[in-house]
Image 1 (cartoon, rainbow, N blue to C red):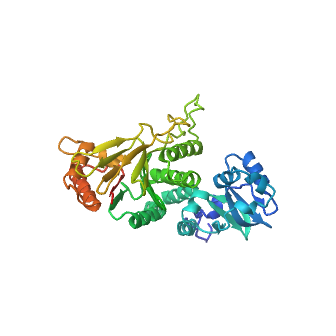
Image 2: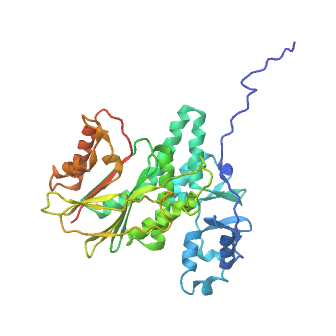
Image 3: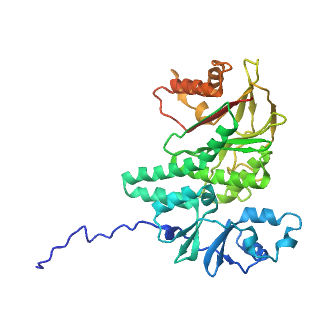
Length: 415
């Protein structure tokens, strides 16, 4: 019998922590000698390619976003002017570039610090300074979630990372809202640490744009969908501007259906258990500073508007069609509704987490009527007080019932 003792723990293979290189997807690239016509050719061959890296002697120096590039090249005379010029003309000169050996933890924090652009466009991965592939924000979030399945303690650690990413995405909108509207309130309460609701707010010289959306699911799956939907909304705003909410809903609808392969024009002959049917309900609206008109388009969402002196108010209903789902046509068109406002007009919009909460003695939904009663109970109070009143009524109604969904609502009073 051997005199050596073997440590059974030492014989087990050690779990290797994933790193940035594990996220690297080999992707075509161009170099500084290539022209914009070459970029068009690459995008034409690789129709699923969203971004194209640019290198110089193998070193990554930029990233070309497909949507932005195509938008620029489609302008009058741009092809004649830029076709033969170097592809650096329309590239992002400051993409996020990370080393292949970077840990997933460090990469997560680096991506959050860099901002939403890195989550939407992805990040370049290099080894010894040489380009090896592209990583995607959604892919990063999935890896972060999967890592934590190894141990229960790390699961919550992962979700905290996802929460950091999600809150970082929303921070700019909340800051812009606070700086633009003096009498407004916004409530965003995920049912879990992360959630499937998101909001967007941006101020412009002639007005402001706002969106509230409720994506499929909640928790981590819902957070994945908010990343997809908010990134597509950002791209649509860059291409179309903020003044046509219906057109923006249509653009996000097309983007979700294409990204998730939910094209209704290609019915599946054999059911696929892995196939998705995901999307969102949403309210998009544009406020014009000069005319004081609020232009609204809703996908299974409504606005509650109460004019000064009107005790009841009215509901302005959106279309009864969600965004991105398999049964929503690729070319579905959402119609805009225009609401006139005056000083003191109150506007309130919510996701269905408020309306559908079960509670009360008969264990039924909170509903729109109780929402309107909670708003009416505080009369002409500021938006912050209205928000408190609605939350108080909602929590009292919920009682001992579990929270069913994420809760998000936004209200403002026109000045």
